[in-house]
Amino acid sequence: MALRAFEAVARHLSFMRAADELAVTQSAISHQIQKLEQHLGVLLFVRRTRSIEITPEGSAYYAKVRKALEWIADGTRQIRDVKTRITPLKVSLLSSFATHWLAPRLAAFSADNPDIHLHLMPSIELVSLGSGTADVAIRYGKGDWPNVRSSLLMHERLSPVCSPGYLETHGPFTNPVELKKGPLLMSYARCTISNGMPGVATSGVT
Image (cartoon, rainbow, N blue to C red; front, side, top):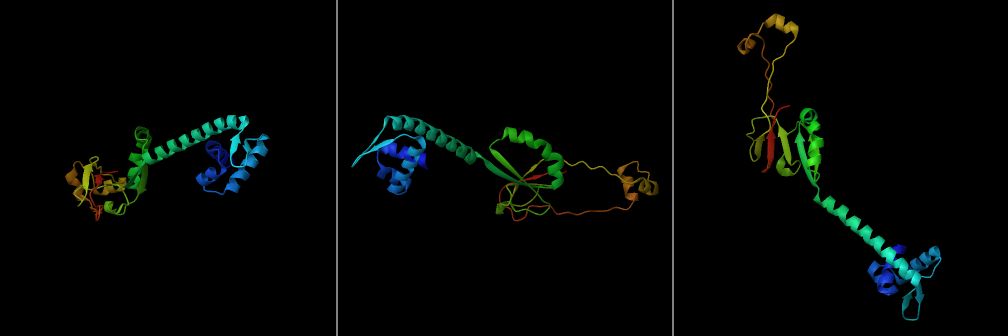
């Protein structure tokens, strides 16, 4: 506060104008200048009846303080500019897909897109893109979800596996048709985008 007060007084050569600029009282400005003078051990201003005059020591100090405050202000603007350029991207996806496929590629994505802050939201629940919960949803399916634009991420590849005991009881299986000889378990999972608005829903498999 003392340096801000000093810079404003030196620039305006007025305690009153400095107080108005910093939205404080004139006595507060005067108190800050006195504290700064005591700390430095020099007189920064000569107080006259209706005016003030900056001393040679004060003038030299003002040049340094003004430049330092300008550097601080410039650094603050740069940080704020970078922050405003960062775009958040909320991605809803299955945990297994995030772990096994996306995670190994995150470092390269961040390096190529430093202005995008990726926020992963692992979930198996339905997600509404129109509600703002997520910007992109990656799900397993045919991609024919209503009210969204879908893009195929990759095709699925299925491989049958079984225990040695199962193979001994129901096998051998020399072709896919012979798999029907054993008990068939079916799983129906609805992973769709509900009540969505136009967005990107990418279908894929883990």
